[in-house]
Image (cartoon, rainbow, N blue to C red; front, side, top):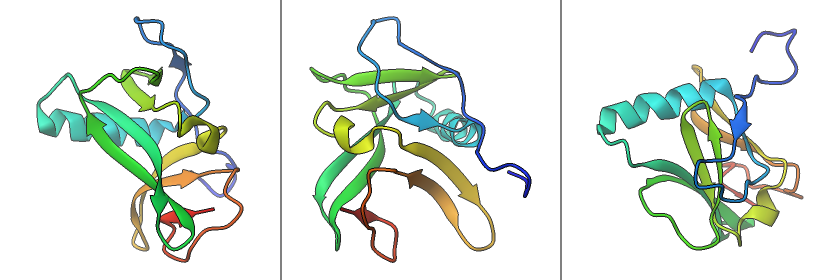
Length: 129
């Protein structure tokens, strides 16, 4: 993202072939590319990126991002240019409008979540309330 750009580019999202209900989380093009790269390293085509919220951390809630082959009852799914992002129904309200990005700079490397629902977060950025 250049200094002139204020918003990261996001991949076009579509519902999956299973016509599961969609969620309202966005995955940037950069993050989708990184997920594709990691999935290629795994060598498995059955994995999807699962995003969730669980109790814990110093601010009360923590994010979870991991690859998962499971399809659970009530999952909300969106496809971003070949990357399926899955969110469980209980986590979805906490993540409405959130954007998942990937940062690879000298200062930090990894996935980031910009969540407009987070009232506060801890200094490490791993938990929120």
